Length: 333
Image 1 (tube, rainbow, N blue to C red):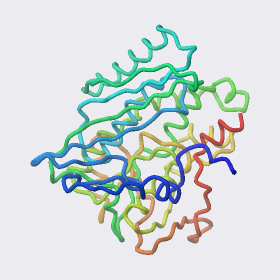
Image 2: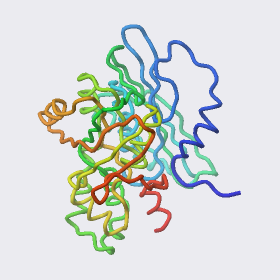
Image 3: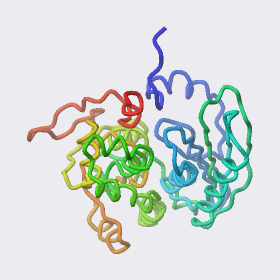
Image 4: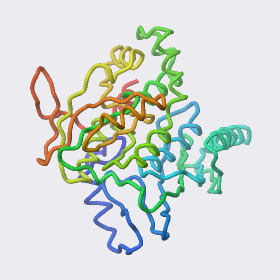
């Protein structure tokens, strides 16, 4: 039997083996489990509860910091403000009290910086685990008329991208593999810039602003980068996209690291970037800019179920195998 590809399972496999097995749906669940829907939304009257879970497996240093932000970013993509997180730590036998304590301090400090609480969780040492796995469940709230679903994109919507692509991927690579990157010709200046992306990995500011503005869909760009996020949005919304990316969405450090490692920045894990679709984008872009957040129009949503990208002056089918560039790097190093 062929081994599965490392990373998130494909949309078709997810629908066949997971989502198709969920048969009972309550009326008070406003956003159900589905492709691209990272948060469930539960009706509580005038407010809704949003809940999302995410693991951290591909990062080494500052994994606790990433775990909290990645989970809370899912809530931001639902237009919800986080309240707290549940933390599950699955640890290898080599784990020490000092290591666990340092990790929990990092998780708690990150939660405090967002004004949220560590609500509880589970901690266990397993012989089957060779590297620490962190699973965070984030819980948040929103006004009932303000939450946003990934599957809300509509034909004609403009596609906005905040900040740029590959921020999380570049940060992980620079933090975990600096010596290797330097040997590949990445400059110390690029490493320093990539490490500074740590301060930009939350999408709470743009998510909450966009939700209050009234947009059709939100999706934080994680595994699979811009390609993966767009495919998830369109799978959830039953539509397609024309992607027209400009070079300005790839920051210099991301471009240099990806060039030296032979990676595609548009398919690199990109927490810190939000994908937004709405009929008219300019006014929201101005609002984001006033809050210090750059955004870029990178295409449009179309009715046809196609994935096209502008290349050599014409729209061509997007050719992507579905694997995040970080996993490719980790599999080859």
